[in-house]
Image (tube, rainbow over all chains, first blue to last red; front, side, top):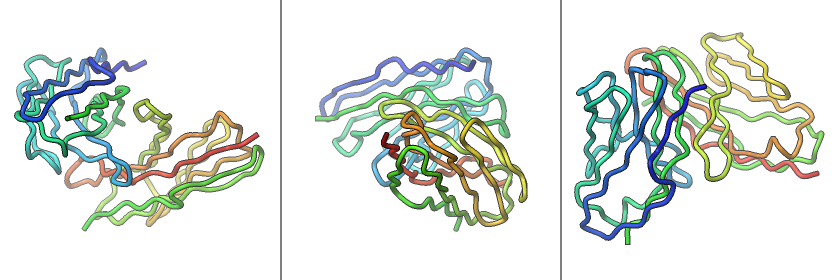
Length: 112
Length: 110
């Protein structure tokens, strides 16, 4: 079974802080994704990566950046956290561009 | 513009009361339509992929079908453990990204 692990289930940070969310997958998947999930809005794609050291902007990249130095690890960075970034953050991976994505259990991030 | 709309937003069923969830989409060139189940506090769990109109997939009490404009997730004789939010996502050929619907929250009472 695919295992996507997100480092924290819950996180509380202050506005202006730099926040790091970590995601690791154990299935040698090529592709990795970061989404945020908000009530009534569904999942929205922030950034994705089709290969190591590659990154592409999703639909809502403003205020975020990512890093993928190793194939199995994909980090999401909030450069200067703001209260409107309070959300559930979900990481996903897929074997290739046509296979389904598999998700971690999410990080519920609160920015105070 | 590509869109994915799920209905109803919420569904309350008695145990054993079969029903269907709808996922309608507008996308140019569908590569695949995906169904997921999400339990509270967890990430979405993959259920099915459908690629072409007329295709059907089944898993226990769930059956997914696909037409050129929509997909249905049929829940037959549901049990309380089928309570979850069901998400659909479409992948268009041209951009490869998934676009998710807002989900249908299903509650099955004994």
